[in-house]
Length: 196
Image (cartoon, rainbow, N blue to C red; front, top):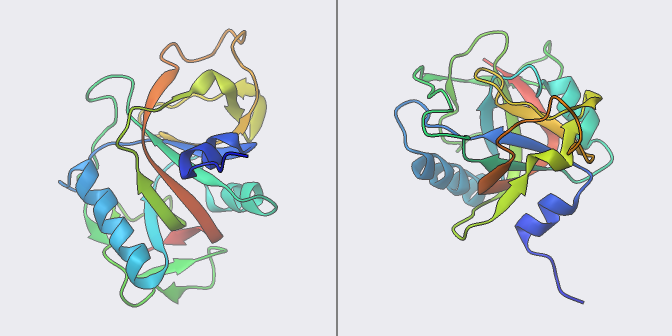
């Protein structure tokens, strides 16, 4: 039996997070991934800031509770399709429930972005950059929080919890559905937290 590679494991699961990748805080995409992989090598985890109503901590925690879950980072449908983050405020603390706060782990690289009440961070213990051309078909996924609706990413909501479901016939499906995978990461407990 052939052993699945990291990307195949991510795509074979019933749930995942799909995130459209763009530049952040004046850093290029590959530099961000390399920095986060260094965190994992150094302290066994990294925190990835997100600002999306479709990937809030309670929702991500619910999705991951009984299954190993992955984040699949994809290219935008067109160049400039992902809004680059320009705010590079550094988070200092995190909270699993939004009320009890702890210092970010010692040795963790900067977790940067616009830090407001909608600033969350996904937590990974493994991440790989995908060099070869490999695509994901977004028509194979529904919105985890509304499984009758297809996955839809828009500016300002480019990270979404998804569940495997054939949405090819749905009238509201995305037109640009085949996206190149740029990286894959595995979520680790507590999966997603608030950051400040």
